[in-house]
Length: 399
Image 1: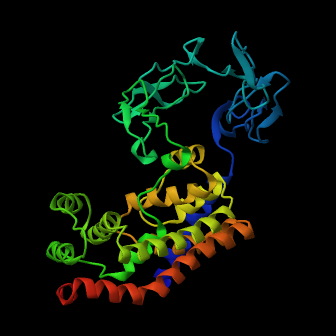
Image 2: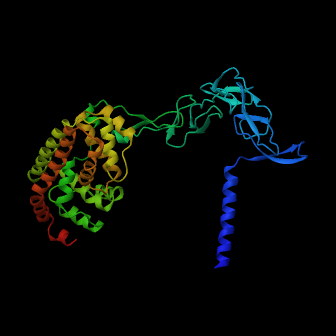
Image 3: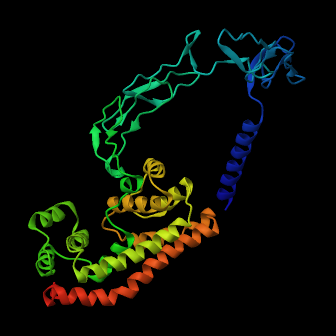
């Protein structure tokens, strides 16, 4: 017990000494003629100087630095330093002299300090972009634009820009871009509606994804191809679908192509009419939404999977009518995420709108779109499932 108490007291003594040393001023050695020995005197804090050194009888006496003088650190100096920094040509006073620091000068905007001169920031030439902007202390850092990016200007601020995605805009590349120019897209003479045509409507996807089995193997796809009535989809198109699309997407692409080839047949006409009615209802609700760039960006960011970028949204707003913009962007998302269900993704995204304070009218219009698609699917699912199973037969059911 005595041994434990002894150790505890020693520890407390060390702790007290350490705390006292940390909080007390730092020291310096000074010879006191009166005492004829070296003394440990307190240093003076920043902004002051030693007016009187300590003696055996009294502590160090400190005094404030006079105007235009400064002391940056704890010190034992008998006078402060003079504020001697003078701002040169092309510099300005960033921080005026005070009791604890000298005057600070900085190069004017667009320049940096190199030895004694303020030099202009380097401008990156065409084919190069800024990877690190210049500062008052450092020059611009340029880098050659990587594959798929370009810069067509001389600038000390501009970075490399991504080449325009012509295919996403429904156009072909007329002149392929390089490091100094963008892709040149072929300008169609079609109307805006034709430029903004999409491969599939939400209604078509809702119907064909629910009306037949979701997953088919390659053999199942061949069975479905051979048993669909009327005009058959040729082997070349089947192989193209297999090569281009995942197994989950193949069935949907096949039915879409089959519908296109047989749209004049009575049985298929009914399917086309129902899809058109549904699409008109969706377009009506979209027309009331009046979505802005910020709202479209939030909607695209709220969808799962790979995102549609801001550049695509800006180009779509520029090229397409308000009633088409949302559908075009959903189709772009669908191209990036073909294995996902667009209807489910849209419903998922709409659940997050409350946090972004969308106008009530806009939110209601978007919810009506999702509700219309759900109603369309539920109304037709039993009818068309029965129709497709009768057409295809028990062979596909077993698959």
